[in-house]
Image 1 (spheres, rainbow, N blue to C red):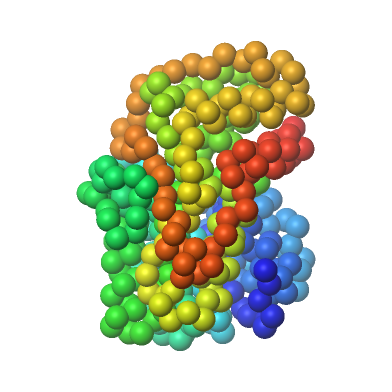
Image 2: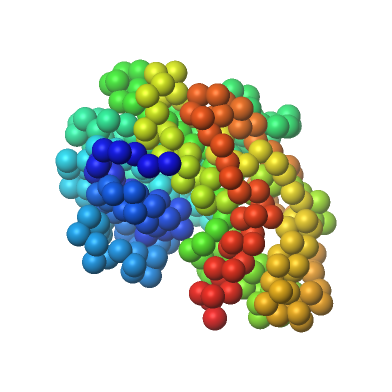
Length: 327
């Protein structure tokens, strides 16, 4: 799927996992890409393959600085706002910084996008917004109370986006990401996501630690499904499709025990010893939702979303990428 007209797309957090994949995709699709990043969690090596591309511009700046935001949004058609401080545990340890980046920074980007008259503002929302809601699958219109400071910040994003749509006429689309994984996702650091962290440990023949008994389940979503959703949200001509939020997921759930089983199976094709690595179980993590499963019917109906990668298909791709890039 490719858009025919060349656009200029600002991707905030463009050096991060999702942002750099979006940057790469839209450059290959013939668009101009502006990346705004302060490299607090993103990496320069994620941009290495296109730093010399004349259609790519890197602005080193911070969404908490309104002047950086104004500079980045100049002459831009669309904004794909990915910049945020992720991680529930990080927000529990440091709620002030999470709020500064995820709420104040988000508001800065809305204001400059409004003033620059961008065509549409697509932003990374989060499945954490469902909070203590018990029902499965999660449908966009039914949420619970947030379980972490991070979840509060991402819900506030949705509220602000809705107000900017109603009050100023800025077209917005929120994408509630569900456990995104894939190439370029960082395996290192205190707040590394579970899949790259487990992959790296298994490659070193170290035992991954699962929080709880491994029966918590997630709707793991491969990066290419997320790219598809961002593009659909950007190009949709359906007036009903904008100024709303969508689950961005595969629409299936797997337990952490399932996940580790698949990882061991696929990685042992590269090193048979990985099949024998023992799994360790620890305490449940504060703020964790026990089960997560998205309904993707709204995205299918209004955007024509058709995810191509299940957990197993995505893991095979991701494991191969990690094997070739982590060593």
